[in-house]
Image (cartoon, rainbow, N blue to C red):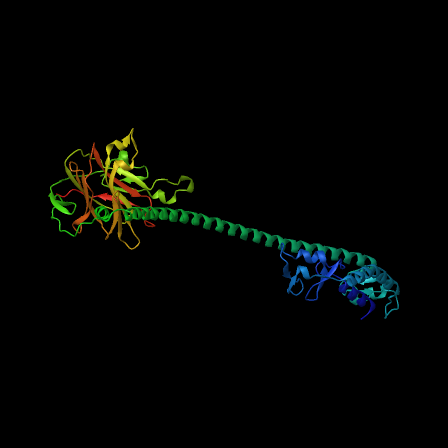
Length: 427
């Protein structure tokens, strides 16, 4: 290798492969490669301690950089000596063929020439420059290449930073969506827990009562065959059966008393919750447990009977209500205004019934009959399909005007809307 080759080889050994310049504060990494400290830190992503070597792509750690002071000193020395060595070569190098100084440089062949060589046929159409101008040109080309490399690396870094930001934004949105779903599910679960806690309290209160009182409150009549005509019903008081002949009423719903979240049919025989209840935002959370509507008919005396169906509802409440509960066009109902049976469909598809006087469990029921005896202060609930009594309340003192009472829970099986239907009167 000639002297020029040795000088160029020495420069290559003292050059950082990232910035292509002489080493500045060089550090050696685990894989044995050496770089300028600042150049290597530019390859580090964010605050990660571990990243890849620009030369071999091996894993390196920021905390394991080893400063190379000897190489720094050698780099400084080489940087100062190289221009003098090249300048001295211009004065000392002579053409072996013509014995002239090589003052020219052939860009095509990438080697120095003397004037006689530049006139030779093989160099006649080549681009030949004076040695000093060639040196300056290559310095400029090297700087341009350096800037181009820096620019391309910066584009790559910017692309990776944008990808990182987009990924973080997606993760943040997914987290917020999951938290919103969790909040809704938590609210539903808390409501269910509250209802079960109320049921437990009712059970515990009944456990403190005398056995005779417990049986009176939770009695269920034995299976008894009812007459084929719905207008011929049997009601039980203290397990004594007495045949009644009530008037079967054609009950309809009163739209003036309907909760705004309920939708009534044109014939006023069907009611359901609006579908918008499924998408109410948290800021419009409804505070009531039931949506209420009353029947249009009124009772001040006599015996009356009507039937209802509730489909797949999970919770409902039916019975009678005092008209005094309606004031100035607003429906405001107190517990003492209502005499109703509350039903709850449990997970295993059995019914949990609750009245002011107690609670009990029964098989699933699809159709219920309600019997009212105003003078006796008596209301009873029947399984129309099985033709037996569900529950018969103790005698009460009815006063004033009564109206049929219906309430739907705003919570139902997922994907369905709560609904209730009044059966048409038998012919």
